[in-house]
Length: 332
Image 1 (cartoon, rainbow, N blue to C red):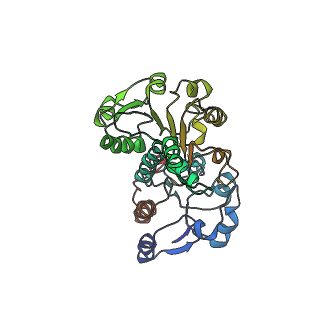
Image 2 (image 1 turned 135 degrees about the horizontal axis):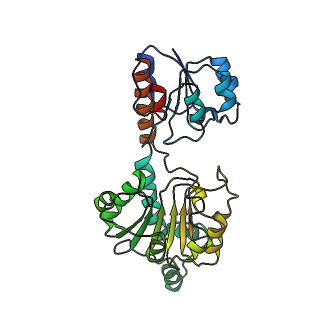
Image 3 (image 1 turned 90 degrees about the vertical axis):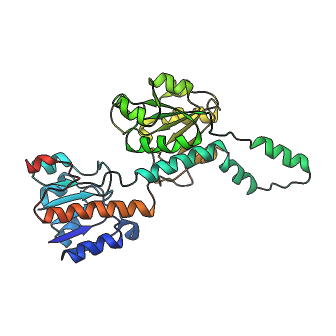
């Protein structure tokens, strides 16, 4: 059986496939620099003639599914929207994913963004990289006052979405001695209790939290969940952290709030226009920490996604049902 892989896999994951006697055609997009959108992956599939295709961001939709005879499709993402799962289901093709691959990585970056904003790390570094000199203690005193931050201890953090990542963020925040507010219409009381938090409505969270961090999924319901009115209800001293999806926040409203200083700052890893480069307008602002959508960019994320997806591939070729199946209907 032959496998075409364009997602990054660890060497240990690849070795598991080789050891199972599978033929692997490996084109890691991080090494090739190629992302196949629309039907462009079709040419590679027709050349490789695989039974199984594993991707990360490459699109596998109508044009490809209708013209290829695939036995299994996989994505190393948590919940891929780049694969037409409904059509694959109609065609009887199982689709697997790698849930939880970057949960810890994103949770840790979220904490890092909170600390960056609370202690003015970006402003401090930018200042020192300019022509800043200390001729006397007055210069130092002015710098010291302008960069004064605050401690997380005894602050209130609002978490929007208490899924896997939101839960890991809450667990880590407990070490800082904060109070935690949760807004999640679908969360259970037990889950909120487990992280020693208080469940509130969105308006209460926005008006009371010193730091607001977003961890809900991008859906029609969460599209611009934080618009101009919601952002305006935040404290003037509050920070917004977004490592989820840009669509959840009205980006124009957020930019206006940051430039007018109606909120104190933001830590952002997701944007409406990606990949991010030096033209991003938020880089002009000293009260924002910008990351180029690298929340899950860790060695451990690659190891987890490799172990998850490879285990399911080996399960599938044994004729058994994969664990992380997005369309269990194909086995029913």
